[in-house]
Structures are given as structure tokens and as C-alpha cells.
Image (cartoon, rainbow, N blue to C red; front, side, top):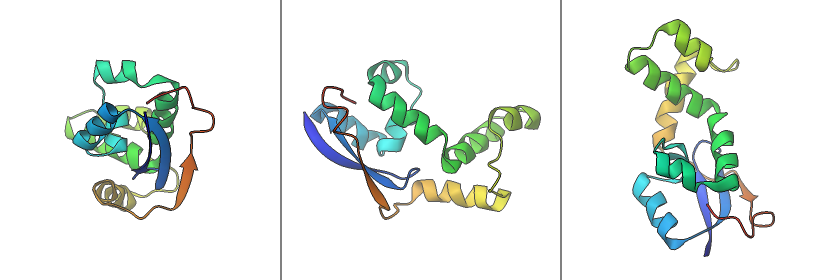
Length: 126
């Protein structure tokens, strides 16, 4: 078990986690913590655990991830009413800001604050 601080682009925070070396390697291969948590692969969904699911849910509530899901749904040809039903545009975001947030997903941002999850999750792994 390793205690590592990984950066989440969508949350704009460093998150301190206890993870195994194997999971750390997988996170690097996937392209970061956000991509690791948001992957839809069945085995990944099974291995996340309670802490991983809590982080995944929190990521999915951010404007950046909602904008990304909206863009992916539109790209595959989903009807506008379905896209709006499942991924409504955040109230404080215009379409221009939605496109900017997609660009921000791919850029590395400076950490804003640190979120320490090790106190409650000593026995839980990601």
C-alpha cells in the first residue's frame, strides 16, 4: 500500500489516497485519476470500492464532466432532448463555457486545495 497524492483535473484538487502500486500504474496508463475513475469497464467498476465510488460520483457532478458527457452524447448522435434530459447544462454554464471546460479537461491545472481522504479510509483501497 502506498499513500499518494493524485491530482483531479475536474475537482481541481489533490486527493490523498492509499492505493497499491498496481493501481497507481493503471492510473498513470489511463491518463490520470479522473480517467481511471470514469472508465466504464466492468472490472473497473467492481474494483473501485466505497471510496472510489464516492470519488466517481463527485466527479460526475462537476460541470467539466457533465460537459464532456454532453459532448460525447451529441457526437454519437443522441437526440437533443435525450441529452438535455440525462445531462442538463449546468445553470451557470453557457455553451461557450461548455467548450472551454472540455479544453480544460485535457490541460493540467494547478492544485487549488488538498483533500485528505486517508483518515476515514485506512482500511479501504482504491
